[in-house]
Image 1 (cartoon, one colour):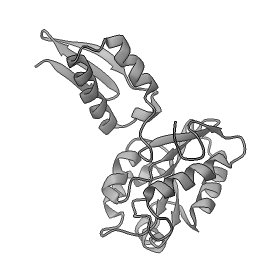
Image 2 (image 1 turned 30 degrees about the vertical axis):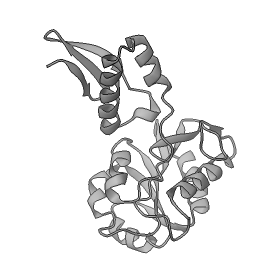
Image 3 (image 1 turned 45 degrees about the vertical axis):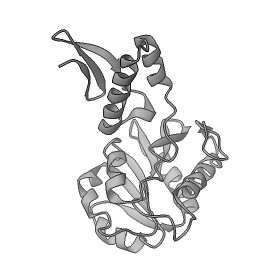
Image 4 (image 1 turned 120 degrees about the vertical axis):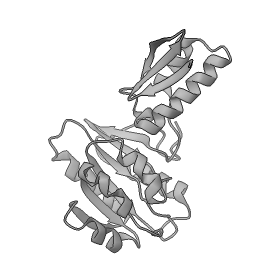
Length: 220
């Protein structure tokens, strides 16, 4: 069948019985992960259907700024990217982000949801260290056990500072510091947007940070 398909990071166009390469998402931070590849494939198909040129579509993919609070790259310091995934208010929502990076300094916690983070165990090998905040900290610590190094940071500000310091000592080629709480925000913040904006502000305050978005509200 004709259409656009995602194969890993590559988008492939099926036409006339042939499978032709259309675009490669590798290196586009805002389109990491299988779920974003599927979203991109659907968007490309829609654009082609209304006559947008392939060149325009490829340029749009490369410049896509991402969505606020959804696996949003907000800052870079050296090889380390800081990612705001505050919209991940339960384990199912955090799973796509945890599956999209290989070495994660994970900030998690808040007001816990039923089931906690037990379903995220398949992604624990990707987590270099967890920084636990809010009311869920003790519960999450018990789930992580000896599988993942962790600290109970308590507050988001402390978690960002400690994660940023720890990742500096990591010799891995690439690592991320990511807020993907797997929790509601209401124990410490009005909503997930306010929590995400607080993360952006704490990241912006770090020495040597290059912000990828505006520091005040997280806008591009």
